[in-house]
Length: 554
Image 1 (cartoon, one colour):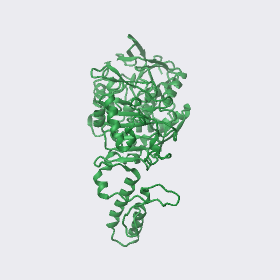
Image 2 (cartoon, helix red, strand yellow; image 1 turned 180 degrees about the vertical axis):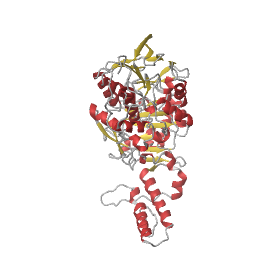
Image 3 (tube, one colour; image 1 turned 90 degrees about the vertical axis):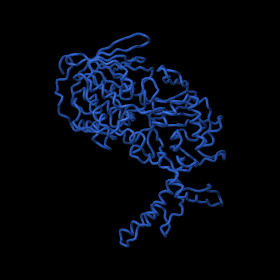
Image 4 (cartoon, one colour; image 1 turned 60 degrees about the vertical axis):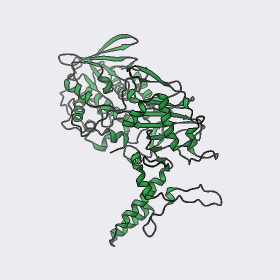
């Protein structure tokens, strides 16, 4: 480092193996490896101890950058517009106030969470895949206790978009498999050894009879529960025509088998926000300073060598400014568009304007009885559902069951999680009408939702992330074949000025919408500041497919 804190290493500084892996992942060229660990943070850079860094936004990436840079001796100040840390990592608890922008762009109170004490619901991130090694490592290092999150059970329900019926997932999955195995077996006419083995595979795979026909299977469950002296009756197979005509696969039925999801994942005990609380705590211990309620109004890169940044912000009705050697922005692109920017390149301004953010909504309910867990007391007809997700063609799209506190008296459910057009429709409704629509969709899966003593109206909450102040969306809606997105993604991987201003977050990562992507991006920027990672982006980059990565649709 030179005396003024400017890196003396050239932009084309050699890159070590772990840094190469991270760079390859961040540029989108690592394929599925981008969802996994790329090794420990590379070492070898020369920290400029005492150099000032401004981190704009205390989302997951901002907190990660603040922790890592503070630990290296940088003087870090985090400016956060809200009065809480975490960004889209938001867990609703009793007394929490939720705000959205009204038609005039002013914040208005939509809900005051009325859950009973001890109950909570994750309004943003809700699960951690086993291959999100950064998230898991920070949880382990910072003592964030984890527990299993159940993504799927065979008892979950399916409400197809083209049929007014509700089926258990096990019947849909196994009957479909049986019929397809039968159809394929019918095409086999050869009598060679390989074809014989294939016939046997199809017999076991589809539960076919000795004639190669599918006539139902106990895999699909029973019509009644086993009782002493009474043998259970297997459920008759759904008709193949009904299955095909229902369009069940169009209700995201197969999302849980995509690589990003598994039957069992992880979640922090007590709420996802324990991750951001731990990151903030450790960043403070390392020396970072947090200024909450600080809305960034202007960012100016110094003229000349572009090695300093000045940030204007408002807090409590007064205006302030701060200067630093480096600035790391975790501000979502739609919000950053509204911030006055000075001495930024035209290419940068085009880039943050090129990619829009996805609309997405969630609804949460408190249930005073955990009716989905079954009829242990012969009260409900529902077969035991312990976690997982039910899928529907209704606007709510999906209904999540809690993976914690089984057999307790009460619980919370995610009563809607939708995207794109469905989120636009739900988000445009008043909070009261959102809950009404969400209840209607839930009743199709569970008639118990008709009873407002079991599922109280006044303890429901909703959030339209595209209307939340300082967020304005769920995640960057990157399209891999969009030429403008290709230019934008590459542009945003490199700093503005010479090496002064950086953007970070899942918004500029191979994993939009995931905390792992936010942490990956933060580590990438930290290593650029250290001089370990080149400041220029690779010649070739691959834009992430946001829809596939967040919704499992291809």
